[in-house]
Length: 233
Image 1 (cartoon, one colour):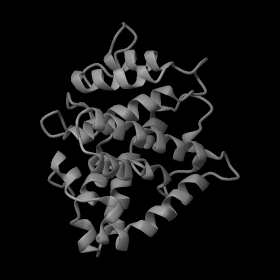
Image 2 (tube, one colour):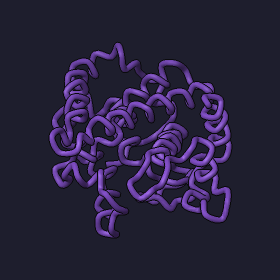
Image 3 (cartoon, rainbow, N blue to C red):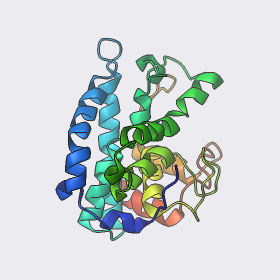
Image 4 (cartoon, rainbow, N blue to C red):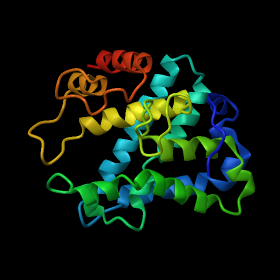
Protein backbone atom coordinates (compact mmCIF):
# COMPACT_ATOMS: atom_id res chain seq x y z
CA UNK A 1 0.00 0.00 0.00
CA UNK A 2 1.69 3.21 -1.15
CA UNK A 3 -0.10 6.50 -0.79
CA UNK A 4 0.58 9.49 -3.01
CA UNK A 5 2.68 11.53 -0.62
CA UNK A 6 2.97 15.29 -0.56
CA UNK A 7 3.73 17.88 2.08
CA UNK A 8 0.42 19.49 1.11
CA UNK A 9 -1.30 16.67 2.99
CA UNK A 10 -0.35 18.25 6.32
CA UNK A 11 -2.38 21.39 5.63
CA UNK A 12 -5.45 19.68 4.19
CA UNK A 13 -7.21 18.90 7.50
CA UNK A 14 -7.18 19.63 11.23
CA UNK A 15 -6.70 16.54 13.39
CA UNK A 16 -8.32 18.22 16.39
CA UNK A 17 -11.56 19.15 14.61
CA UNK A 18 -12.04 16.56 11.89
CA UNK A 19 -15.28 14.57 12.05
CA UNK A 20 -13.88 11.54 10.22
CA UNK A 21 -10.93 11.30 12.60
CA UNK A 22 -13.13 11.87 15.62
CA UNK A 23 -15.41 9.05 14.52
CA UNK A 24 -12.81 6.50 13.44
CA UNK A 25 -9.56 7.31 15.23
CA UNK A 26 -9.86 9.36 18.44
CA UNK A 27 -10.93 6.55 20.78
CA UNK A 28 -8.42 4.18 19.16
CA UNK A 29 -5.62 6.69 19.70
CA UNK A 30 -6.46 7.05 23.39
CA UNK A 31 -6.50 3.29 23.88
CA UNK A 32 -3.31 2.84 21.85
CA UNK A 33 -1.42 5.25 24.09
CA UNK A 34 -2.55 3.30 27.15
CA UNK A 35 -1.44 0.04 25.52
CA UNK A 36 1.95 1.54 24.66
CA UNK A 37 2.53 2.76 28.20
CA UNK A 38 1.56 -0.65 29.57
CA UNK A 39 3.63 -2.66 27.09
CA UNK A 40 6.05 -4.79 29.11
CA UNK A 41 4.43 -4.02 32.47
CA UNK A 42 5.58 -6.62 34.96
CA UNK A 43 8.44 -7.63 32.64
CA UNK A 44 10.65 -4.64 31.90
CA UNK A 45 8.30 -1.62 31.86
CA UNK A 46 9.51 -0.87 28.34
CA UNK A 47 6.21 0.82 27.53
CA UNK A 48 7.00 3.89 29.62
CA UNK A 49 10.24 4.49 27.72
CA UNK A 50 8.51 3.57 24.48
CA UNK A 51 5.77 6.19 24.92
CA UNK A 52 8.29 8.80 26.11
CA UNK A 53 10.41 8.30 22.98
CA UNK A 54 7.43 8.74 20.70
CA UNK A 55 6.34 11.87 22.56
CA UNK A 56 9.81 13.45 22.33
CA UNK A 57 10.11 12.61 18.64
CA UNK A 58 6.64 13.97 17.86
CA UNK A 59 7.44 17.20 19.72
CA UNK A 60 10.82 17.62 17.99
CA UNK A 61 9.32 16.97 14.56
CA UNK A 62 6.56 19.52 15.08
CA UNK A 63 9.12 22.10 16.22
CA UNK A 64 11.30 21.46 13.17
CA UNK A 65 8.35 21.84 10.80
CA UNK A 66 7.45 25.16 12.43
CA UNK A 67 11.06 26.29 12.03
CA UNK A 68 10.83 25.34 8.37
CA UNK A 69 7.82 27.62 7.95
CA UNK A 70 5.00 25.09 8.12
CA UNK A 71 1.71 26.13 9.73
CA UNK A 72 0.71 25.35 13.31
CA UNK A 73 -2.01 23.06 11.98
CA UNK A 74 0.51 21.17 9.85
CA UNK A 75 2.83 20.79 12.85
CA UNK A 76 0.02 19.55 15.06
CA UNK A 77 -1.18 17.08 12.42
CA UNK A 78 2.36 15.75 12.12
CA UNK A 79 2.67 15.44 15.89
CA UNK A 80 -0.60 13.50 16.10
CA UNK A 81 0.74 11.03 13.53
CA UNK A 82 4.26 10.75 14.94
CA UNK A 83 3.00 9.85 18.41
CA UNK A 84 2.30 6.39 16.97
CA UNK A 85 5.17 5.94 14.52
CA UNK A 86 6.69 3.01 16.46
CA UNK A 87 3.44 1.14 17.02
CA UNK A 88 4.98 -1.82 15.18
CA UNK A 89 7.14 -2.49 18.25
CA UNK A 90 3.97 -3.86 19.86
CA UNK A 91 3.34 -6.31 17.01
CA UNK A 92 2.53 -9.84 18.16
CA UNK A 93 5.88 -11.12 16.91
CA UNK A 94 7.72 -9.14 19.60
CA UNK A 95 8.16 -9.87 23.26
CA UNK A 96 8.89 -6.75 25.36
CA UNK A 97 12.37 -8.10 26.11
CA UNK A 98 13.31 -7.64 22.45
CA UNK A 99 13.56 -3.89 23.11
CA UNK A 100 15.66 -4.05 26.29
CA UNK A 101 18.36 -6.56 25.38
CA UNK A 102 21.27 -6.57 27.88
CA UNK A 103 23.86 -6.66 25.08
CA UNK A 104 24.11 -5.62 21.45
CA UNK A 105 21.49 -7.46 19.38
CA UNK A 106 22.66 -10.38 17.30
CA UNK A 107 22.29 -10.07 13.50
CA UNK A 108 19.05 -12.09 13.66
CA UNK A 109 17.67 -9.98 16.49
CA UNK A 110 18.61 -6.79 14.66
CA UNK A 111 16.92 -8.01 11.49
CA UNK A 112 13.74 -8.71 13.43
CA UNK A 113 13.86 -5.33 15.16
CA UNK A 114 14.19 -3.58 11.81
CA UNK A 115 10.87 -5.03 10.68
CA UNK A 116 8.91 -2.92 13.17
CA UNK A 117 8.31 -0.04 10.73
CA UNK A 118 6.80 -2.25 8.02
CA UNK A 119 4.86 -4.23 10.63
CA UNK A 120 3.47 -1.01 12.08
CA UNK A 121 2.26 0.09 8.65
CA UNK A 122 0.65 -3.32 8.25
CA UNK A 123 -1.14 -2.80 11.57
CA UNK A 124 -2.56 0.50 10.28
CA UNK A 125 -3.76 -1.18 7.09
CA UNK A 126 -5.52 -3.86 9.11
CA UNK A 127 -7.11 -1.26 11.37
CA UNK A 128 -8.38 0.80 8.42
CA UNK A 129 -9.71 -2.18 6.49
CA UNK A 130 -13.39 -1.61 5.82
CA UNK A 131 -13.18 2.01 6.95
CA UNK A 132 -13.11 3.74 3.57
CA UNK A 133 -13.43 7.26 4.99
CA UNK A 134 -10.41 6.70 7.21
CA UNK A 135 -8.22 4.90 4.68
CA UNK A 136 -8.84 7.72 2.16
CA UNK A 137 -8.19 10.48 4.69
CA UNK A 138 -4.96 12.51 4.35
CA UNK A 139 -4.10 11.96 8.03
CA UNK A 140 -4.10 8.23 7.47
CA UNK A 141 -1.63 8.76 4.62
CA UNK A 142 0.58 10.89 6.89
CA UNK A 143 0.41 8.39 9.74
CA UNK A 144 1.07 5.43 7.46
CA UNK A 145 4.05 7.24 5.92
CA UNK A 146 5.82 8.22 9.15
CA UNK A 147 5.24 4.72 10.50
CA UNK A 148 6.63 2.86 7.50
CA UNK A 149 9.30 5.27 6.31
CA UNK A 150 10.86 6.82 9.44
CA UNK A 151 14.07 4.83 8.90
CA UNK A 152 14.54 5.82 5.26
CA UNK A 153 17.57 7.77 3.99
CA UNK A 154 17.76 10.36 1.23
CA UNK A 155 20.58 8.34 -0.38
CA UNK A 156 18.16 5.43 -0.92
CA UNK A 157 19.91 3.07 1.47
CA UNK A 158 16.96 2.72 3.87
CA UNK A 159 14.70 -0.34 4.33
CA UNK A 160 12.28 0.59 1.52
CA UNK A 161 14.96 2.12 -0.74
CA UNK A 162 13.14 5.46 -1.02
CA UNK A 163 15.31 8.52 -1.67
CA UNK A 164 15.23 12.31 -1.61
CA UNK A 165 13.09 12.44 -4.75
CA UNK A 166 10.37 10.25 -3.21
CA UNK A 167 10.48 11.34 0.43
CA UNK A 168 8.43 14.48 1.22
CA UNK A 169 9.90 16.85 3.78
CA UNK A 170 7.62 15.68 6.60
CA UNK A 171 8.87 12.11 6.18
CA UNK A 172 12.48 13.30 6.10
CA UNK A 173 11.74 15.19 9.31
CA UNK A 174 10.41 12.00 10.90
CA UNK A 175 13.67 10.24 9.98
CA UNK A 176 15.83 12.99 11.47
CA UNK A 177 14.03 13.35 14.79
CA UNK A 178 13.72 9.58 15.29
CA UNK A 179 17.42 9.00 14.60
CA UNK A 180 18.43 11.81 16.96
CA UNK A 181 16.32 10.58 19.85
CA UNK A 182 17.38 7.00 19.26
CA UNK A 183 21.03 8.01 19.41
CA UNK A 184 20.44 9.87 22.68
CA UNK A 185 19.05 6.78 24.45
CA UNK A 186 21.61 5.03 26.65
CA UNK A 187 22.11 1.43 25.51
CA UNK A 188 23.42 -1.36 27.77
CA UNK A 189 26.63 -1.68 25.73
CA UNK A 190 27.41 2.06 26.06
CA UNK A 191 29.41 3.59 28.90
CA UNK A 192 27.56 6.88 28.77
CA UNK A 193 24.70 8.60 26.99
CA UNK A 194 25.58 10.69 23.94
CA UNK A 195 25.28 14.43 24.37
CA UNK A 196 23.12 16.40 21.91
CA UNK A 197 26.25 17.63 20.13
CA UNK A 198 27.68 14.10 19.90
CA UNK A 199 24.43 12.73 18.46
CA UNK A 200 24.23 15.55 15.91
CA UNK A 201 27.87 15.12 14.86
CA UNK A 202 27.19 11.42 14.34
CA UNK A 203 24.13 12.22 12.22
CA UNK A 204 26.23 14.57 10.08
CA UNK A 205 28.89 11.91 9.56
CA UNK A 206 31.56 14.08 11.21
CA UNK A 207 34.58 12.07 12.31
CA UNK A 208 36.07 8.78 11.16
CA UNK A 209 33.87 6.74 13.51
CA UNK A 210 30.63 8.50 12.61
CA UNK A 211 29.79 7.05 9.21
CA UNK A 212 26.53 5.27 10.05
CA UNK A 213 24.40 8.22 8.92
CA UNK A 214 26.72 9.64 6.27
CA UNK A 215 24.45 10.66 3.39
CA UNK A 216 21.25 9.80 5.27
CA UNK A 217 19.78 13.26 5.85
CA UNK A 218 19.33 16.50 3.90
CA UNK A 219 22.04 18.92 5.12
CA UNK A 220 19.70 21.93 5.12
CA UNK A 221 17.14 20.17 7.32
CA UNK A 222 19.85 18.83 9.61
CA UNK A 223 21.36 22.32 9.95
CA UNK A 224 18.08 23.82 11.15
CA UNK A 225 17.44 20.88 13.47
CA UNK A 226 20.93 21.28 14.93
CA UNK A 227 20.24 24.94 15.65
CA UNK A 228 17.01 24.02 17.41
CA UNK A 229 18.55 21.31 19.59
CA UNK A 230 21.70 23.17 20.55
CA UNK A 231 19.61 26.20 21.46
CA UNK A 232 17.92 23.97 24.04
CA UNK A 233 21.26 23.14 25.64
